[in-house]
Image (tube, rainbow, N blue to C red; front, side, top):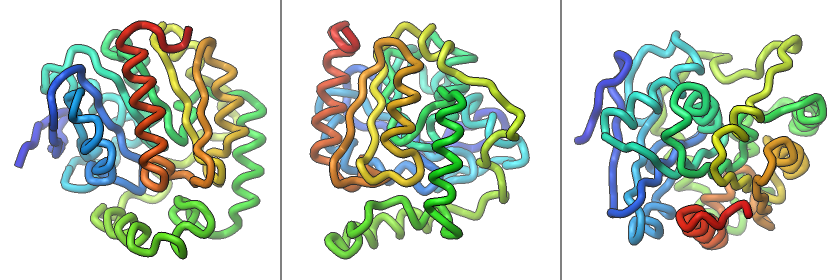
Length: 263
């Protein structure tokens, strides 16, 4: 099984296909396996790299280092796998790794696809929306809101698979991925803009974790960024509506490769 050791962590990864590099970053409820519908489609024209963040899936490493390891591990992984530049696709938690990449190795990004994540591009309105969504969700954990209302009833087999893939992950330290303290007013939007690469924000219509309004607000902070809303989908729109998601993202990657995305 393919592993690399980076920053004292042992990361599991897979690579499929050939062509320009695309690197997939999973969310807190996922691991490398959740991208099965994307790898099958994109590996026909791209080299697709999926991996488990430390402490997720088959990867292991000290978790006390906290959320900042997501970015430093990504940069080290790209170096170890000799991936000079790549299209980066991040779902939810994966946006934290994008923030780290933007700060530590901005030259490695060819384009960004930010799915259900602001990637740290925030302002007071985004923070207000985060508070409103927390109240709307109530006491249930984020995991209970990963899929659109009614998805499980309409697609019981896919919903079961989604939960089984999530169940592979070991427990993680409580609070590791919590929001910054209320006094924090930083934002990554200037770093994301300074990358000068095409950026696509994509979100599900019924996302109760990062709502369309929140993502549109984050998108407005990054000049030239594109936006797409997947109708009928929730937070995991890449999984729930893979056909539409793959079509939209595939078109964006091709245009990014030609230098016409974000124009």
